Every structure is written in structure tokens, then in C-alpha cells.
Image (cartoon, rainbow, N blue to C red; front, side):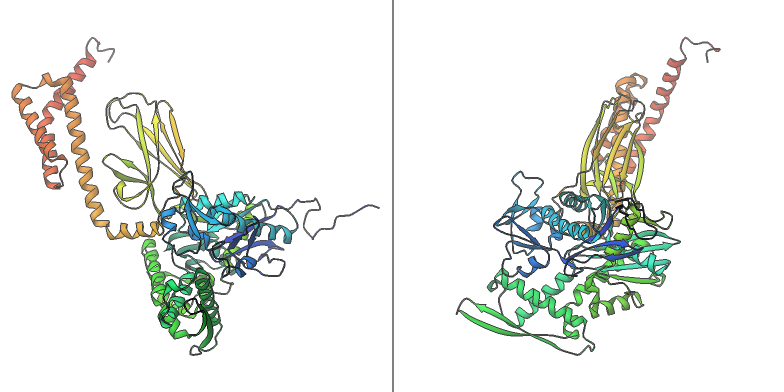
Length: 633
């Protein structure tokens, strides 16, 4: 009997013809996987029809690993081996990790890899990358079981404020999980993609994304299918977890319980109660309704169990968390300022993240933007849905002409120039992927090598920015200062990862570096860098102008010294003495901080050396013409 393969209308009958790709929202509190089926993006449930997977991993003594809901159930009983909110540690260093209140024990990697943090468990030490890989592996199995075939890849979302280190850590985790990363995209961008395709809206929109562990705000321009991120901002240490802990801290103060009295298991249980009551508050039809629960605490001092009453209302919760909401609104103000926009230009506000269900958050957002926010797509799922749409396109399904997606750089990229100045090659908020090139030259005669220092940040001086990488270009031909041409190219791929190359144009000598991100960053560094740049903008510009003046004067002094060594005989003794005296005076102020003194020294030395420069030019022309006829000229 012949067998016929039956397929859906319009699909190929060739086995495995359709390439399966999914979108993954790797969240701090929960993670989701979604795919496009029958032209509709939808979240893929697990075997028990649960659409959210807790981002929790438990390690057992027998070496087995439990992920998701089963791990979450054991978080209070086994906090040292049950890891939650690991996203906060992705790409972070040990020094930063120890400042966070975590129930598990941390240790530095034995090989000292840039201070990479490792988490001690009963099954051995694991890195945040390995923990995230377990979550991703669970999502991959869930997707393949639902879709009935292996995946060709996934689009994974990351917070807009994730830097190179955190993005690379996410890709490493996916690789460990056996997932081919088609693209990393920013979470707000994924949300805008979902809303743009489903609602068909155009104009300027703010995407307010308050998740479990991070807050992101993005200003996007949607025009005729083009998605452009105009500016981004946020707070890497603000999310729903902070609201839960604020409530738990309030109860402890109310009950007069010292934090040190609580074991890690008790603290987790109390925070869990806070989360449960907070979520119940979102479902209350009336704002003045009071929610009450009981909390039992085992007191080791007298071996008794004490029961405390926990209560919560919309008003009390709003008062307790007002400063947290205000932090998010300050980031919104800065994002608007970065985009050069006024509030009235924002045509809509998109809410993303489960924490945006909170009544006080929605009210604050509506009041700030002076309009009711959009929330017709499940805020827990909208990021995964947008990622699934992007994955479907990258897998070859759908038309690439339907829309264009443009993410942006969160911080400027550049390199160090003479005097410790930061020269920006790709400015902040430039859409990616992008490649930019800029030409530089040598500072000294006979220079055959150049050290290239790649930096990231908004400040004018290198010392105030973040160092990304250093490499050297060697084998350059010896030339006079300023004659060599070195073309430096910065290239940022669609995942926001950077590679830099330098080439001497006359010989083609080249060197390059793939910027392998440092895992030793402090938490909130990017946000702090931006705040510092705005706070010190005027001082930075003055410092840059001063440093440039110092470099110009120093370069003039070196050029004159070299010229005098070759053509000093062109000056009389009196002229030479006067020039030497002026050069000595210039050297005395070259390292000073007085702009006017530097300017006067530069002007005086330039004026005094002009006759000498003219005589050198005459001599060079005369030597060039010696022995040549008019016809040869």
C-alpha cells in the first residue's frame, strides 16, 4: 500500500521542508518561547498547558537538574541550590555579584577569568551562563515537543541596556543549550514589532518595559513598516522583584523582626507571599479593598511558631513603592531628552512586562505621558511574540519587505587619541548593524607601530570611559609624523557585538580584534556612565579643549626640536637663543591647566618660528630643483 504524506494547505509535502524557528524571552523572573503557526505568533505551552516557565534552576546532589515550576516549588526549602533571577548576574563580575542579596554562595572562577562569578551548589560550581543554558535547554525541548521537529534557530531577546558582556554571555548560554542564535534583539524592540504588525500603528511610541528584574524604556519611530529605535534608557536594577522585596521589608519593620533573624528559606517564603499578594492586588475591582494573609515564622530562640498578619491595599502599596516608580519615570525623561522629543510628540505608550499590571504603575505612566497606555497584548507575552515574528522572518518565511528592524547602540564606541582623548567613531543611538571607518595618522617621525585602545562611553577623556580592548598595528612603513594613513573600522553586528580593524593604507598591513567583552563590570555601570556624561558635560568639554591645546603645543615643540636638529644652521645665534628661550617657556606651561597661558605660548611660539619655517621651505625647494632643467620641471 502506498503511503501519502498529508500536509496543511499551502505547505510543502517534503519532510522537514519548513524551517522551525522560535522566539525566546529569557526573562529574569519568567521565560517564554513562542512560534508562528498558521500565520499567527503564539506562546508555546508546556505539557501542563502553562505558558510561563519560571527562570529558576535547582541542582540536586545526584547531579540532576530541575528547571521551571518544579524548581520554584523547592526554592524556600533549598535556597542554596535553587537559583533564581540569574539574569542579573549574566556577564557580571564577582565583585558586583557579592553586593547582591542572594541566598547562594559565590566563588571566583579558579582560573581567574576576569573575575567571572561562579555559584556553589551541591552538584558543584556553576556559572550564570550555565544556569541560563539550563533554562534555554528546557524551552528548546518544550518547543520541539510542541512543534514536532528540531529547531533551526531562535531569536533571543535581551534588555536594551545589556552591554557586550551580557549579550555575549546570552549567546554562550544558547550555544551550551544547543540553540543556534539567529539574532539577539532588544526586548522593547520585540514588543514594538508585535504591536506594529498587529495594530498597524505608525508614529512615535514609548515602550515602557517593567519586568521582573530590569526596566527598559525605548522611544521608537514606526513609519511605513520601518521600526527605528530613536533612543533607549532604563535601570538594570529595577523590576518587579524590587517591589516584592520592598513589601517584605515593610512587613518585617511593621512586625519588628530583624532581617538577620530570617533564614534564606524564610526570606524567600516571605518574598513569595509579597509577590502573591501583589498579584492579587492587580485583580481587585475596587481600589480601597484590603487583602489579608497570615505569615508563620518559626522562632528558633524559643522554638515557637509565631503568626503575623500581613495586609495590603492599593494606597499602601502605592505609597511604599512610589520611589521605585519614580526611578522608572526619571529614565523616561532622559530617553525623551536623548531623542530630542517633547511629551506631546509621543503618540502612544506600549506596556511590557508583568509588573505593568500594577495599578499604581499604570496610573503613573498614564499621568507622565498624559495618555492611557496600550495594553491589548498580554504584557507577559508580547516580547516573546515579537521575537517569534522576527525568527519566522529570519527562517525564510514571510517577505523581508514587510518591515525593517533597527536596534541602536546604547553607548558610543570610539578609540583613544593623543592626550588621552576619546574620539567617538560610532555615536550612541546609532542603528545597528553598522560599520563606520575613520582615518588616523602617526604622532612621531619614523613610527612603525600604533597602539589602538577601543573605548565605550560618552565622556570626553578616555580615563572616564570604559575600556573594551587594546591591540597593536605593527609593520607600518617609517614616515614623517602625519604622513601615514591608518584606517580604523568599527563594525557592530545585529547582536550588538563589536569588531575593530586597523589598516595602513599604503602597504595594506592590518590588525584586528574581536572585542571579547569583560565579565568584570559593576552593576548599573552603563546607566551611571550616561548620568555622569550629562552631569559633567560642560566640564568635560572644557577638559577636552584644554587637553587638545596641550597636545597641539606639545606637537609644535616636538616638530620644532626635530627641525632645529636638521636645519638649525638657518638661524643666527641670536635667533636661535630667542627661539630656545621661547620653547623653554612653552614647555613650562605645556602641562598646566591655564587655557590662556597655553594659547599665548602657542601663538608666541608660532609667530616666532614662522621665519624659520619659511627658510626651511626655501631650502627644501632649492634642493628639489638643484640640477634640473626647465624642461624637466
